[in-house]
Image (cartoon, rainbow, N blue to C red; front, side):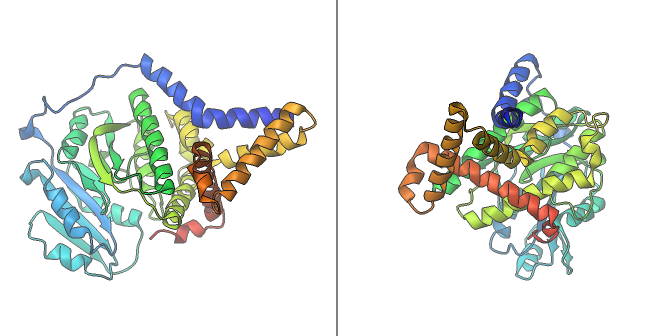
Amino acid sequence: MLLVFWISLASLIFTFVGYPLLLIILSKLISRPSLNLQGLDHSKLPEVEVILIVRNVSSIIEAKLKNLLAIDYPMDKLKISIVSDQSSDDTVAIIKNFDSERVSCIENTYKSTKSACLNQAIKLSNAEILMMTDARQTHEPESLLHLVKHFKNPKVGAVSGELILLDPDTNEFSQGMDAYWQYEKFIRALESKIASVPGVTGAIYAMRRADFAKIPDQTLLDDVLIPMKMILNGKRVIFESQAIAFDIPSDDANREKIRKTRTLAGNWQLLELEPALLNPFKNKILFQFISHKVLRLISPLFLFLILLSSIALSGNHLFGFVAAIQVLGYSLVLLSRYIPILSRLPLVNIARSFLTLMWFTILGFWAFFSRNHLTIWK
């Protein structure tokens, strides 16, 4: 039990603290030139096709299209292709009535999956660069230029932009989600500087069409499997902080629970769909992939083993104290649901956000194991 305690504790600390610290150290040892827009020749910019997969977004699709068409990019080199996946509202009518020859729409009358629609749209495209986005977010005008500037390097297969969450002070839950996203972006920026990012931001990223490899239609995390396939094929996937999209963090705990459950189930699914991700001879960023993705998936197990082993060793005063602290912490988090004032305590709020993530991780594993992950895409 002593060995179980120390291995579990060390693994948990490395996953959330040690790995970011190691990335900071490695990033200091690696120097890559930064790119700006000053040397970008607008007359030689590649053709870009924005691909958007939607279902029942009639309330926001017009604003999204206006925002995309206002992006700072030559009009004759930018078009927008939308796949409507069995929309039952006015989404398709709004798109077709939109006054722009640069906007086209494919109407699927059968219910499919997002990944199947992506495969469909990309197969029909002939643009050199594809920009992927979602319906909800808005883009900073120069965001596309900041993505495209990196494709002068033939080794770059995909570039992820940065998603900025607006108004994160709505409530404690949305604050926790914003804090986690800030932590995630910090890690991605360091990974990008060192080698590649094991995944992109689905709300804003671009890729070279020639480097795209078709993904299984049932894929939940297209924004991880697509770039990871590029990495397996020898390309780099990087993060660009100046390519910005804006969103509002969710203040709906139930909606966030569904989204995170799907995402975490999707991480397990990745290992099933693409076993080569765990092959050290094919995945050049295996250490990053395991540290960033896999260890987080088994973090709830580390927590459980730390609690179990410390209780078993509680005859020793040190381990008894550690066990008592854990029980107290879990109790305060549970009580904070019924005693709101407890949520105002910084340590309780941090612990609550962390344990909520751990709970979502457990739900994600169960959704994958029970195969419910196949039915939770909306």
